[in-house]
Image (cartoon, rainbow, N blue to C red; front, side, top):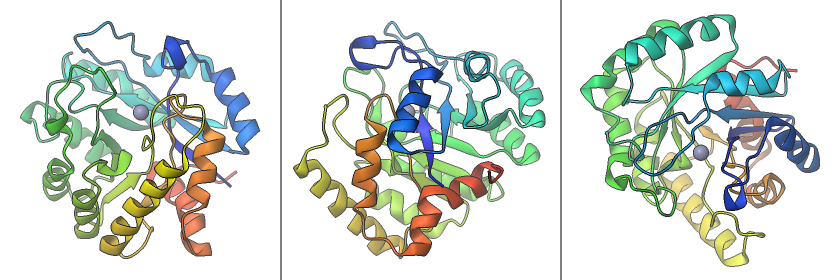
Length: 271
Ligand SMILES: [Zn+2]
């Protein structure tokens, strides 16, 4: 079973093309991916951003079991109201995690305004995904706010919450690996590494990815806390999956990275 733990819909396709759940399902069929998580991104940023809400995703998903939904919290809106809105969906299992976008929005993961979100996640046993690393080209955000070291602080304050670092902290992959090695509750998705919207992943970029992963595994000791993810539609799922499959992994790691970790972190039913 293969699970892509990081995808989006909306106007994130090449040249702002709006992509839908139907497009994603088509891509999944082509790449032989069984399940994808769609991350809502309804955040407030200075440029003309049209984010997608978890409700938008839930409507489009139409209860298709191959699609799972991650809600999001925007620091720029009433946090309590957003949590209340997410709660019922979390309780029914329609939403399986919460994403936040430090750096893109003007905050750091340790921002005091977010403490109610972490307390909520702890109480409801909901995993939280935090953006780490590079911001998209042209973004107006502050990259430094998305440093993996902030995740270490949250992991210490809330050891019962499962935290996923999106993009394994890239370019700070060594720092990300150190946090993952230290904290049992921190995982990483391996999405968003390559040049966005390139038709093919180049051999140079694949070599760079393999080198970064080699350093990463040298610190963490294994791939036991890594999740396969792409950040589709910024990349082809099929090409990303092929690049991932070239990483040296034993059978146990392969199973963990491509499905078991995501099943465990997000409480997904094994189909
Ligand atoms: Zn993403």
